[in-house]
Length: 114
Image (spheres, rainbow, N blue to C red):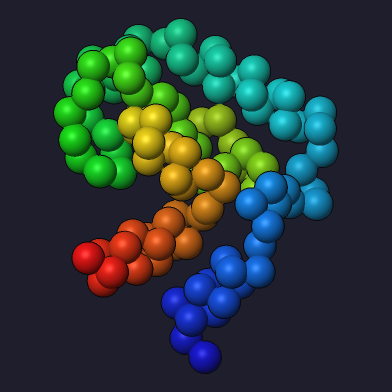
């Protein structure tokens, strides 16, 4: 079975509120605090100023954009520059706790349904 088929099958079985068993509440609090600090940096303000959603590529006002973790905190991700992207609220809500590979598969399925 290919990797894509495995991810597809696994993502159907994951509940929406899935959290990795190795992510402790204290780790989650620490990473959320790091994310709050990251939002105060010039690096983040520059990303917001561009106004482009990482996922859909549409242009937004900075106030309409949010921070998304490519690998969600609930699934073991960290609040680092390499794991955080600017995205619109709609994409952030739809992505939820999906991993990048699962999100790509979701988008591929949406394109096929059109």
